[in-house]
Length: 540
Image 1 (cartoon, rainbow, N blue to C red):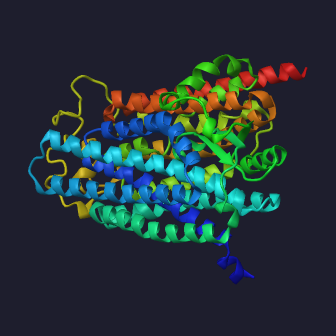
Image 2 (image 1 turned 120 degrees about the vertical axis):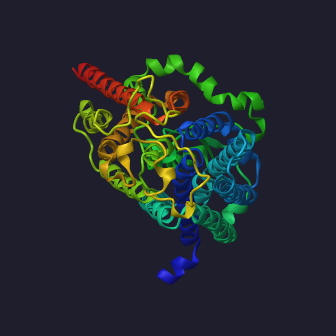
Image 3 (image 1 turned 135 degrees about the vertical axis):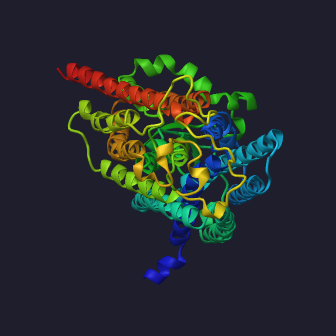
């Protein structure tokens, strides 16, 4: 009965996953608004944040996985959960403190401002690493034990997890955007902090309840482990790919292989089995920190000898673009007068278009990417529209207040942040004079966002097709190194994206980033066309 189901472990793990996913989506969207609110003059802070986040996952991802392997299940789950939520709450409080200082004081010294920036980024990076640990522990290990070797049950649970992810991706930005716009950033910061702590209490109870219900979780981790390199889709979703390690108890290698293959198929992953004990893992901490770069070096020859190199390169190109709903896009639109309410709704609509892409399988690989390229042409058009801030003339810089752009002379010092919406000075401190108080006249930004929203359909379709090609064409003995190389390549391209924004962070230079992003998308489409031609020749 339904009542018995609610009292079981499945309902508890579903609720825990939903709360964790909702908190993650809410925090990711909030950070885009927070960062641009405390540094409204450019996208430099947002880009630095993304750069540090990507570097941390790239360098410390393997160390986090190793810590998970060596720590007892309940201890690792509770510790990662507590640290993630507490760090988010503390970071929100630090941001709130900075916003209050900027609104009260006439001037904040640069050293103090940069100290706050460093604390905010450090707390966020640590929270992200704890999130990676929680994903490995709960979503990749616990539910396998929860299913008690029932293959059908395992397939149902993984599908349910995916549906919960999609629900939070649709709704969390919309709800968060309304709170930030109509309640204000101060209340928004407080809400995020309180939500994180309240969610922590519920998640802690649910995790302990699941642990007490499922006896298999109390047993030790077996020496047989399976490494899975997740291709990591949906740029702007999670952002980065990562390497996962799943352990099984009292199962033969044959059964483990079958369980992992089925379990990860829904996650669009591939599996490489190993039979080494956790205690005998080779390589020190420095080798673990450099693991992503080592994989890139060692896997270069194998990767390019595989027939999937062209779709793999196409997938990597999708990571080097600002044409997605990440911190950069949110920050740019906010600088030009768009509220969190509008951006949240647009993100939800974009997620809806992306979901429909999962139901569309191109008849031919050469079709993959064409929809995305066509839709993103709108982004190129937006750069040249009359009210676009794009202008590279020497006399038209953000520091000048007598040209096309308006300098934010007071920043956040003399405004009331509870009224932080489309009418506040902080939202329009960088932009054209014609922008005024409302974004209605920002046709260029509307066209840009429309192109990004429509392109989500093509993006998710291209991703699904690419992963399918990997699953079908990569030889079993090469799956580990090929997918490991692909994962590291995706991370590297995402890292380069943020590096570009650090170099050209101003609103009037954003058009250059649009051109570079569009060129990368077109290059990815060309790679897919090359793959289609070569595939046709092989079949002949």
